[in-house]
Each structure stands twice: as C-alpha cells, then as structure tokens.
Length: 257
Image 1 (spheres, one colour):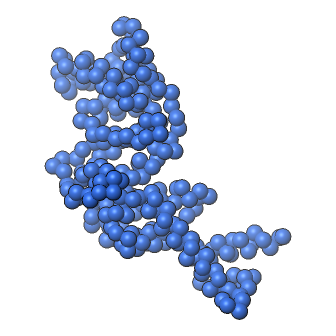
Image 2 (cartoon, helix red, strand yellow):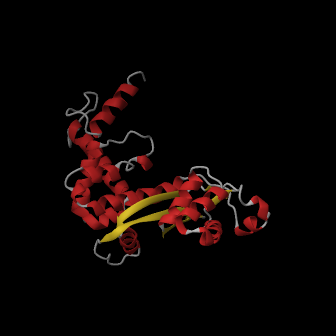
Image 3 (tube, helix red, strand yellow):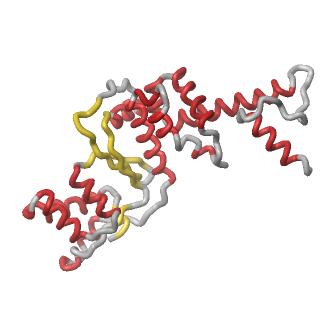
C-alpha cells in the first residue's frame, strides 16, 4: 500500500505528458507493451480534454472547424495542464490563450467568442441571490428613494465586444448558418445574467453601463440620479434612473435595495 501513491503520481505524470518513459511498475502483456497500454489512457485523456473544451466553447469550435479546434485544444492542454480536481475549470484560461497566442490572436473575433462563452458558463455556477421585484420597489416610500442602494445579483457578468459575437453564437446554438464575423462600428457593452435556469443577455448603452457600475461600486440611488443629471440633463435623469431600476427588477438583476 505504501507504494500506491508513488504509482499514482507516476501514472498521472505519464498520461498528462510529463514523462517520456513509462513507470517501471506498469507491466506489459503479450498484446501490448506497458508504454502502449499507458498511451491508450493518455490519448483518452487528451480526447476528453478536447471534448470538454468543445462543450464549453461550441462557438469557437464552430468557427474553427473540427481539425483546427483539435489543434487548439492540444496546444492549450500543453500550455495549461489541468490542475483542478474538477474538469469543469479546465478551460478557464482559453480566452486569454487565444487572445495572445499565434495563430489565434490574429483573429480577434475568436478571442471575443471564447470570452463570451466562458462568461456565459460562469453564470451556471454563480451563487443564487434573493430577488427584488417591481412591486417591492413600488412599496418603498418616496422620501426613501434617494438613499436606496441597488445591489446586483451574483449571477451577472458584463463585457464589451467589438464583434457580432452574440449573433454568431445564437446562430450556432440554433443549428443554423452563422452570419459572417463583422467588426462593429464601435464597441458595444453587453449584460449577461442567469434568470432561473436560463441565461439571458442584452446590450446596454453607455449610461446604463455607468449606472450598473455605480451599483457595483456601492453607490446609492441619489448618486446615480446626480450622475445621470450630468450625463443626460436634469429633466431626463430622474425618469431614466427609475426606468433602469424597474428594468433591472423585471430582468431579475436586483438582489437588494
């Protein structure tokens, strides 16, 4: 029994590509050498890693095609070997990998697709939050609105995209033909969140993005109204702020006030 941990470590090192020689304690057979038997496991693990990346990044897979995606998976696995007990987190570094490594970094839309897909995936594991509904807001006395502190749910992510990635992903998910990758005239900010068991996303304008950031920074409703006054003018600010608050509650984005 005392030799078992050492055997397990040497086996792991071999199948993950860390050693060239098979562990001496592994026996061969008449049909295959020890190294050949171990290589079966090594190849199976490599295929499993590629399969997991394909499940996490179907959009990237569709854009690259099978052969190019397998090449990407192999290069990524070599650069970022699995170091977590759960294979769920194996692909967490892929967005940064494709954004910085040749040849993938030459195609910025691939990096954006990878980032979009990983942020979506994160929402599945994000913690549940209590939800503030529209009727909860309506019950708050008018003189208390200024001091309200809108807090956003944990299952929410924001990112800025320069390509038509959401449209590409939606087409892939529906099994249709994706539109051509298109660089937008200007970057667009996107909001992604989990509503029940469903993942939602929508674009947000610069003013709403600013207001959401103010919520993340711990600011109160009065601060948001003052900031919107500077951005869009006194006459429109209060109505816009209230509209945002109602929209966030309707979208299940508010965890507390």
